[in-house]
Image (cartoon, rainbow, N blue to C red; front, side, top):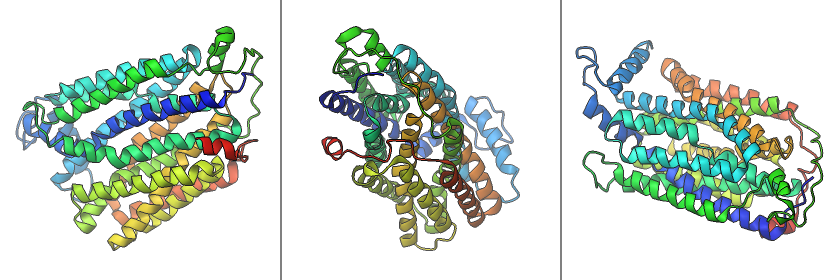
Length: 453
């Protein structure tokens, strides 16, 4: 078994993870509020207004023709203003499904060649993806940038694997919560910054080049920072290097002890898939619902999502990091059930924000807790692969959820859609309560270690 990581080195690596992941996620969230206007720009430039009477010559026109055929299959008429929403959902699903393909591959490569090598390789793909967005004066180039980004985005899962490498069982939950805090902070400030940057026009052929350029700058900065500041954390590679490892107190090269599994990876993967299947569908449909019920503009939806991110950040820093991972998952899934039932019946903005508080609790707990639980069930030389496979199942759920949920939303209405979602999440909650157990050591906390983080 590898020697424990000393406190000073652990603190240094955690700092590198936090700063790099924050840069990465802020850059990633720039594009989220821009999708409607961005896709409208490409549609106005490339797709005819009436697809039934004109020849579809561009890729975007061809895609929209199929999306309109899908929309026409519903008994309830769906207004044309939802065309861009459908297109954005299709691109979001494509990105998630591509990540589902790439995540296990990136994880296994990190187990074989090291976390640092795999992360830097992933960053090369991210740079290419954002560079294509900067140059995307047509939809074809923009679509290519999303494909490259989906296949190369490995920062989150590799940050999780690194956090596992440098933490012991008693500090695992608090370390994972630090990664979750990066999400919350980035989603609080990133979309607003991206929206502001989109108002600064620098290239007429691509009105969003400013936001894309700043995103590229952040990704390049992150890559340089990782190259110089991140050491290798994979225990087996550090041991092969002999006593010169920077991550261990000595040159201990004992064989890793076999892992005593408490929860099957199949069950953890199933919970991750089921949770994100319903949660992502609800998350994607929320702006439609607020528009229909309260006439919310993009700005008001942005404030609502910012509120969710802010509350989640506070919970990650003050509560989640102190909870055992299984308890964290239970609290988050239960909050999600409450949020679904409330969203199926809300009639006021105050009720909307109460439901948003429940969603913030869910965002701050579930995925962080599941990642922590999965890390307990993997040995040192398979963590990257196992975490990658679990992320893959989650991304499949995230890719399918918006399509399935919005189909029910348009077919049967808000009440039925959110009630079905509540029942689905309740089923996931039953699995969490009945099938998952706390791994040995996950219930213990070290006060000193928590304070140092």
